[in-house]
Amino acid sequence: MIDIVRYTPSRQHEWNTFVAEAINATFLFRRQYMDYHAQRFADHSLMVYDKGRLVALLPAHEDGARLCSHNGLTFGGLLTAARTTTAEVMEAFTQIAAYMASHGFSTLVYKPAPTIYQQLPAQADLYALSQIGTLHLAARDAGSAIDLANPIGFSTLRRRKVAKAIRSGLHCDESRDLEAFWHILEHNLAQRFGAKPVHSLDEMRLLSSRFPNEIRLMATFRGCEMVAGVLLYHTQQVVRTQYISASPEGKATGALDLLFHHLTTELSLSQRYLDLGTSALAGSHAVNPGLLFQKEGFGARTVCFDKYEWQPTGLSSHEPVNP
Image (cartoon, rainbow, N blue to C red; front, top):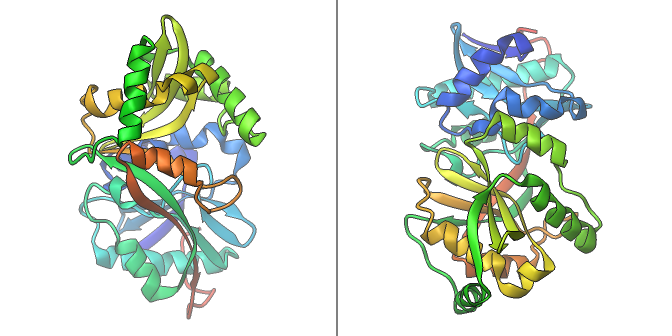
């Protein structure tokens, strides 16, 4: 018997314990990360139990009649453990559909984990959603990732820029100076897009203090001056570039090229993939050709970040569910 229970703070330890063993989760799903900006979203995360045993989590928030994969996260579908079976996932979504009907939700906006973040095959969710209701691909963004176990290598242009950076006397190292990096990042975003980082400096300092081993800053320096940086999120098998930015001097001297050369050839990362993020133009899902060209020059290739809309069908709003 599958039961659906809404998450409450009293269940934080149970939630975090399951996240640690899930095959398609990262530290971003721990409540210490999800809840840092709790005031921005009306959390409506769900916990799935089978005969009292926790078998899945659905990080989510509510938006009117829509139950949404949490907008505070890049992705976040149904989180499952290695022991969670396809039959349990099918039944979980049947009961989630009933829960949605009884709570006034007509649509589930769903962002599954891209395949590179799945430690084992974990697409029973997409199969279940396609069988139980109407599943529609609402958006698809082109992400870029480098397979560190089978690297393509840098393009000729990128290698030339690495050589230029070395001739300019630049060097790479880990840094804790988030303020110096945020100064570069905020200036770039304001100049190019009239935008700000998703996280404020204070928010990132808070998250970094909570996850010092997972959130790390690598930077390129001329002497003691930071000229470029990449804020990295270390997960089980993916290192994700949360923010990438260079100063005008860094751009002119190939600072990011040297930094990515350092990440891919000298740092000996234990993870399989380096995720360089999406290359969407501001406010759209269309690709920024220049940004994609740069990332593919580092040896990255496309990974899809999908968003679906699911409408359950054929279920009564009077189906019994746990509140």
